[in-house]
Length: 277
Image (cartoon, rainbow, N blue to C red; front, side, top):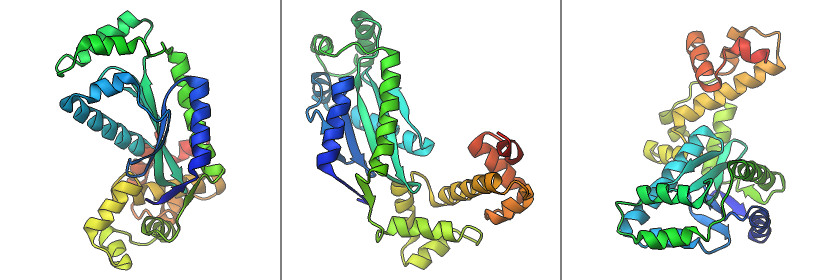
């Protein structure tokens, strides 16, 4: 685990979130291992779903997919789970390094119980579950409007920022993922690739790839590209007189056309357009 959490303060913060929203919230580390939750007990609906091995496996897959999606987007991700309830997950980054996730669910985001029942019945029809028990447990779930769901998600984004600002989360700087991340940012204009980085740190390429996926949410080559684009964005705004071609070089891109293509892909804008937004 590359992050350490002040569990007492963290739990108090989660309790406050639940008091306001009535939505269960959980904190996971970067490997998606649960660290803290409030309330600790899952909703009866989820316990019933997880009583079926096939449905429980589907829960795990659903969570993993959501985790990877949020990490790849580096942003909040809200979705409907495989059983028909709504969930939201927010990756936590410190110094652009993935250190954990905030997750809330399982929300009955429907206009009426009848509407929700129809969706749940369809989603769970292939599981060995007693649908009547699921529907009965759904009645204990508060009806959450889309507005409240979105507001709760925004509040969770704020909590993620608060965790870092208040140092409830702190990096262990001696940790290898941190060292690799710092090394990349210090050598962006040089020839960086997986073999040279692995050799520098005395590890195998397979281990380097594992660290990148676990800590940065992407492959090592993609992480390098993202860091170079982040540097280019900063230079575009801080050095308005520099030609875009020079910014490409200063950000570690030897191919100008490739820089333009990658910049537009990651930001949605050309460098010139980004500069005047």
